[in-house]
Image (cartoon, rainbow, N blue to C red; front, side, top):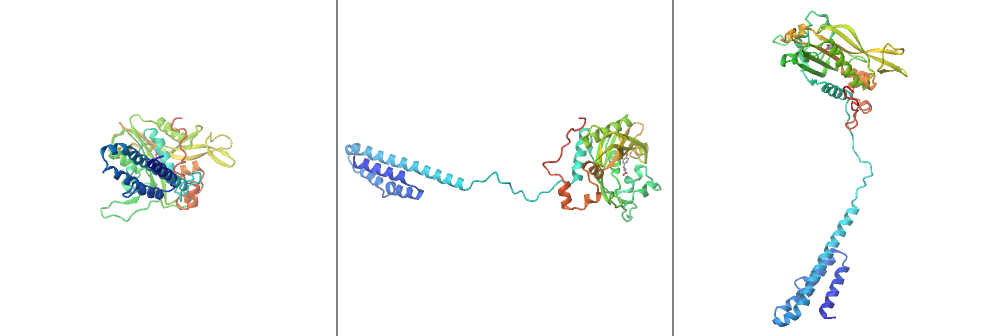
Length: 363
Ligand code: DAH
């Protein structure tokens, strides 16, 4: 073996044995650095005669190439090993339960409002809103409740001190003023629902000074009580997610509708619990009032500047909190607004497992 091939074998063996990047770097400097052995041999080629260089050059060049290649290969291997070791040390155990921290939940009122908006969107209704601080014209007068009307007294209204311009401001007692605002600001045909907060000076297990209502209004040509009944039946079936919803329409009185009906749904007693569904007149059954409604009074249509001979419609209104209580089995309305986290944890809905309306409308 020549001196050069012995040197090559030795260097390559050393490089193969290097077990850290630092050790490899020391070997590189010893061979290829400014004063390295290979560099020294390369320098001897310069002063040689062409003939000598032709003879001695190739083994030296081969030495340089082999050592350079061995260094590069070993460097890559050591770097890969370092990376592998790091990855192994920093693995994440994906089977451990994640710490998701405290989580909020959707309040049953918000949940039910979303469900209602979804159901009525399927029926072509859009959502309308109006101010919670109203004037008595929108809240009462335009709805055919004149100043002397006993219905004003029945509403337990929160009034603001008299304003200088003589306008009587109040906290709206129902969502019905949104009917007026919608008719005055838009053109028929109209199909809206108006969910929102309403206020009455009242407080017990089923009444709170603030609660939620949803109003519905349809104004079009040739609208009849039949359209009203179909709409309410379709809505209640989708909302309670049952096909066996039976409605009972009872004649009633609201100043803003004529004729007016109150709508009951049949329930069945199951283990002492009222479960919505079934014929209320069947043994063990009964009726629960869920809605007020009727054909929009022509005086209301007129007050909004429309011709009641051309445009007719129906309206309905109901309590959102009450619907939530019936659907999700809660019995104290006050708990809705206590902000008790334990209650919210129990009755609230998680963003990801909110029950969807299984059937949708018309299923
Ligand atoms: N505004 C009524 C209330 O607060 C509810 C209501 C009844 C609304 C009949 C309507 C309706 O639109 O037609 O008691």
